[in-house]
Length: 165
Image (tube, rainbow, N blue to C red; front, side, top):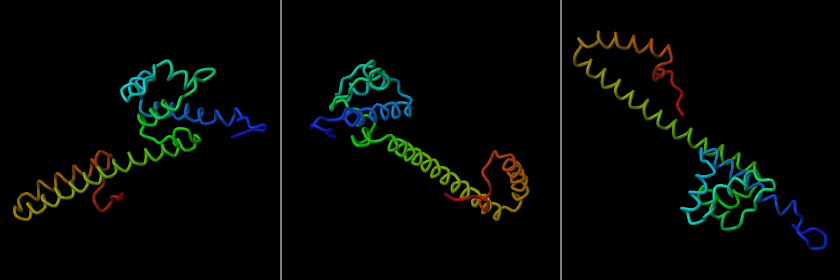
C-alpha cells in the first residue's frame, strides 16, 4: 500500500512476510518438522535454503526477509497456495482446522467401515447358529462377555446404540 508521497508503508509491506513467517512456523510444527527438515525439503524441491535461514525467518530479530522463490517453495512443500502463505493468520487457523476435520472424517469413515464389518460378522454368526442350534449356548456366553466389554468401554456399543457419522 502506498503512503503519502508514493512510498510504501513499512507496516503494509511487512504484513505479508510476518504472516508468512507465522504460517511457516505453524505448518512446520503441525507436521513435527524441524527447521532443518524444512530446509532439506526446500532444497529437494529446488528452492535451496539452510536451516538457520528458516529459523531466522520464523524467529530472528529482525526476521529474515523471504524472497519470492522461497515463498513459492514454502507453499509447494506445505501444499498450500501463496495466498494462504501470506494471508492473515486467521486463515492458517482455518486451514489447520480444515485439515483436522479431514483427519477426523477419515478416521470416522474407517471406524464406520469397522463397525459395518462387525455387523456383517455378527449376522454371519447368527446365520450359522440358525443352522447349528447347539452353537447358541456358546454364542450366548460370548455375547455376555461382549456386553461386559462394552460396558467397560473396551468395545463399541451394539448396532442399535451407535451413532452414525
